[in-house]
Structure formats: structure tokens, C-alpha cells
Length: 248
Image 1 (tube, helix red, strand yellow):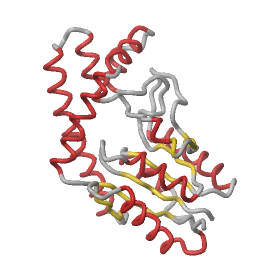
Image 2 (image 1 turned 135 degrees about the vertical axis):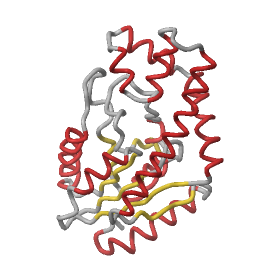
Image 3 (image 1 turned 135 degrees about the horizontal axis):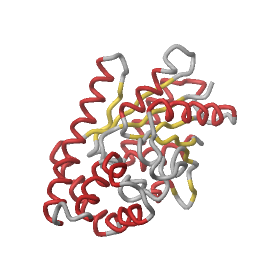
Image 4 (image 1 turned 180 degrees about the vertical axis):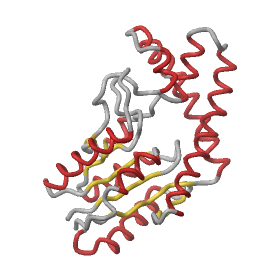
């Protein structure tokens, strides 16, 4: 049976890039474990960063991104079923699976479904110094606001996505929508959104620690490591864990 490798971590830790590098090395396909990237035309606010899936000019196959229309309600159960079907298809094509994302609830629900089966699973996480993570979050937020996130939310409003639904689609859509509907000025929106994302990052780490207490072993990479150091860590431990099941 082909392995399932999970790469998780809080926001702004570079999970997608590392997952794509590993996928290219071992011929894997990536399954997104993000509660919002499932929606079309919600790109900047959800941090899809599709360019990260291109390594040395080769696009790494990815799944569960851009498959639903904005406005549709997604649930953990719905995601679990979609992901199980995608993983089954990938494995039937004799390829490894890399599950990548920061939605701890989605990752845990999916992996729990495999705990009683012989499918091997190995979980890696990326974490770093809190000050460095905070710096990366703020820098990324500024870049997104300057590069079309406000226009993206305005476009969703223009096509009729209800404000109540945007409010539920997460912090970026909630606060930018409040700015666009004149409930917040720009500076207040930025400060509140920046603070909220920092708090969300802490909650993500709390969820991952809860997974560890529940029996999931997470092998942690340091955010400060170079890409070469991260890849050596991933490849060495994956080969040790999967032995003959791991791609050459």
C-alpha cells in the first residue's frame, strides 16, 4: 500500500512549498487539507499560492482546490468523503499521497478514518519561533492586501455571495468584508485582522498539540531550517518509516 505523508503546521510556515518539493522527489500527489481552498475564486484570502506547486517548471498534481462555488457550505464530513475518494484514486494509480494543510480538524478527522486500517501514515509538522511566525504573518498579510485581496472580496460581494457567508469563510473575508461595507476603516481593519490571524495561528498549534495528546505522533521540522535541511529530515525519516514501501 502506498504511504500517506501528512505535512501540517500553522499559517505562514511554508507547508505547501515543502510538500511540493517532497512530492517531486517521491512522485507523490498532494491533497489539500484546507477548509477554504476548496472554493473557486477565493485565492488570495485563502493563501492558495498555486505557484508553490510548480517545482523546476513541473506542476505537482494537487487535489481538493477550486472544486466548489463560493457560497456553498462545506463541512468536515463532506471534506472527509471527498478526501477519502481522492486518496483512494491516487493509491490505485500506485502513487504516494501527501496530505498538506493547516486545518487541524480536517486533518484529524481524515486520519482517524485510517487508524483501524493497514494504510501507513506518517505525520510531519512545521513550527518555529513565535516572533518569526508573527513577522511572517504580518508580512504576508500586507502583501495580500496590496496584491488583490480587497478586490477579491469585492468581486465575491458583486457576484452575490452573502455577507453572512463571507463572515463565516474566515478572518480575511470577514474583516475585508467589514471594511468594504464601511463598518471598519482600513487601518482598524488591518490591525484587527493581523491580531486575529496571530491568535488563529496559536489556536492551530493548540489543536496540533491536542492531536499529539490523542496519540498522533508529529515529527517537527524547524521553520528556521533551510529547504535542504527540511528535505533531508523528511526523506530520511520517511525512508526509515516506510522501508520497502517508500519510492526509490
